[in-house]
Length: 149
Image (tube, rainbow, N blue to C red; front, side, top):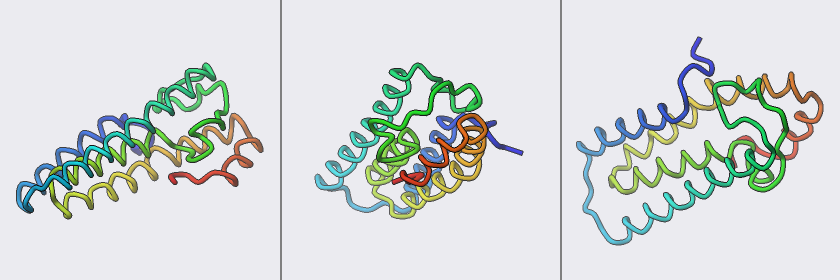
C-alpha cells in the first residue's frame, strides 16, 4: 500500500512535470492576465504552505508528513482554522498557478488528480493516525474545519 510512502513534495513534482508535458501539447496564447493569475496563485500557495509550517513550529510538533504518529500537538489555530491541511492546499494553489502559467486547461486538471491522490494516500492515513493520538479532540476539530477549504 502506498499510504505515507511517497513524500508530498515528490507528488507535487510528479504532477508539475505531468502538467508541463500536457501543456506542451495544448498551448494557448500567453497574456499578461495569465501571468498575473499564475503569480497570484503561486503567492497564495506559498502563504498557505509557510503559515502551516510556522504554526507547526510554534506548536513544537513535527512537520514530517511521512510520520504523522510523531505529532505531539493538535494544531487548530491560525491557518488551521481555515483548513485541516493548509500545506497541501498551498501545494494545490502552486500547481494551479503552474497550470495557469502553462496556459493549459488540460494541465489544470492535474490539480484535481493531485488533490485526489493526496486525499487517499496521504491525508486519510494521517487522519487515522491523528485520531489515534488525539481522539475526540481531533474528531471535534474535524467537525469544525474542512479537509481542504
